[in-house]
Image 1 (tube, rainbow, N blue to C red):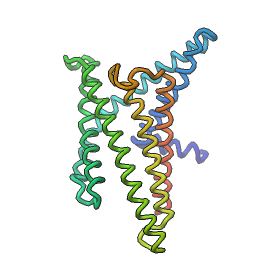
Image 2 (image 1 turned 90 degrees about the vertical axis):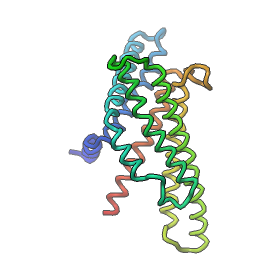
Image 3 (image 1 turned 180 degrees about the vertical axis):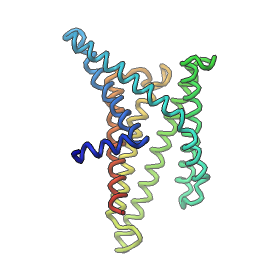
Image 4 (image 1 turned 180 degrees about the horizontal axis):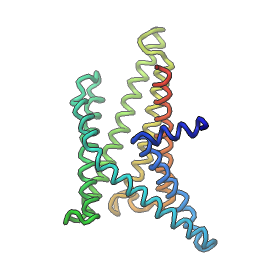
Amino acid sequence: MQPSVESLVRLLESYRGRDKVIRTACYGSQLVGGALSRRAEADNSSHRLGKRLLLFSAQLSHCRTVLRLFDDLSMLAYSKSYGFGGKEEDAGLRWLSVLNNVADQLYYPCEHIAWAADAELLRVKSDKWWVLSTVLWGSSLLLGILRSLRVLMLLKKTLNRCESDDGGNSSPSQLRRQMRGEILNILSSAVDLSNAVHWMPPGFLWAGRFPPWLVGLMGTISSLVGLIQMNAGDSEETDST
């Protein structure tokens, strides 16, 4: 097989890689489907195709929700290993990470309850649980942005010290690569946060005002950034072995 096909196969064989591919396909379908649906008056065939793509996107989103039913333990293991961030030298970075982990940990059971309510497995209303899970997701994204900004500031100080001292444990190129990674994290989290606000109850900022194609565009940008970061991480691991 060609290298590009082999890379895609390796990506799909891992849970993390498959989730990113499904996420990209989900938001990409919503982007194209939303754009085509707007052409209802000009072209009925394009409108029908757009509706099918939006339905396909909804099914992929539901698929990811079901798969996340099994993420609690892995998240709990990560939170337990991080603890209160005793290994972090910076207190601000440590507490931002701890709060981020708390938001992520609480997100999963709230989403599970909302899903179970929609599936009529639990006799509760799902609306408040979906809102709570969205609030936790948005909080996690905001904390992630603040954490990346803090990391950027610390990396900038280290880079200036490294360049002035002409030495150190980290090379300037490595520090700049880490800074680019944090910038990508901020971009990805910012566009996801815009969608999180859109899914909040009406009346909160721009909640409910995004058309489907714009939601798809924001999600596609975030998904592509995630794929780029994953590919960069894999490349670094390959180079180090």
